Length: 238
Image (cartoon, rainbow, N blue to C red; front, side):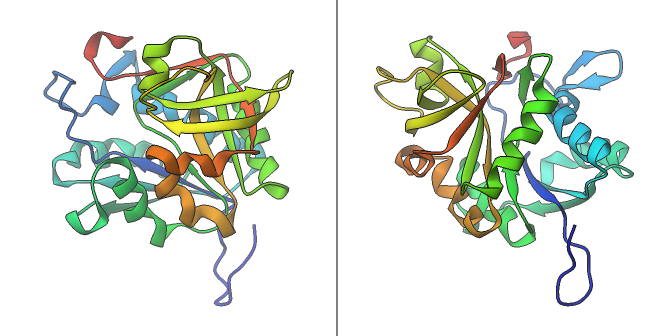
């Protein structure tokens, strides 16, 4: 951790958590990130599990920037359970920020400091080494502008609806050869990203990366592999 010019401690990592969506496909009377998938666990708890591990094992200061709209009051209340783990701030996504995920990331950027990651609250990453892989991706920002957590995927339907990658190499860390968000033609892609990390000097590029052709900025970035992940869009997705 380092101090800014006013003596304030900057976070080791800022994590943008976009929670402003309208959840049109999720047919439930509560935010989908609060859908229970365990006795005391919701989807957002699983999404934040590697972030929590990073904070607690390293004694790191992690700032959550949670992007909301007025209908997400329940999510704000729920995240109080992390008050002793994260420095949590909330920001409203408005029309001036733009729509969808890119607008959410744009709304969060003024509150970010240090290396920054985008963690989707409705995405459950799987595998026994997820926490380790998350930390490895963060550490790669010492040498790269961007890094991603990614899973090998050969389903063209999923690739057409995710952030698609073409990776080269072997082993747990590979290299991004091509990248596109929701490509109209997924042929040639063999993986998808779950989390995007940006070094401090490059985080302003995140809104462009998470939509469309702007993902090409990830080319030549390291991709740290996890076993897989689930996007929870409907109640029966898990």
